[in-house]
Length: 78
Image 1 (cartoon, helix red, strand yellow):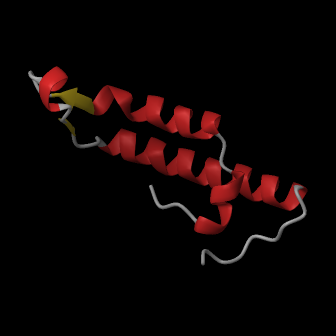
Image 2 (image 1 turned 120 degrees about the vertical axis):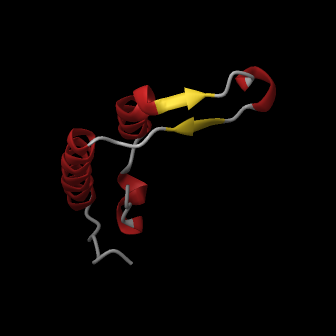
């Protein structure tokens, strides 16, 4: 996910949680996860990539509205 830094301040914990939960099914912990703390993320299907693109677009629009409502201007992705 590409994140526009000018919109980062408008992101909430709920926004982050929604994205984590949307990708959680792809995460596969190693058999010794409790000892190593590592795992891997399986490749996304075509449908998952399309869904991710849609979620990203929706999130950018939502964050842009929040920034505008708070009186700050959003730049061009600086």
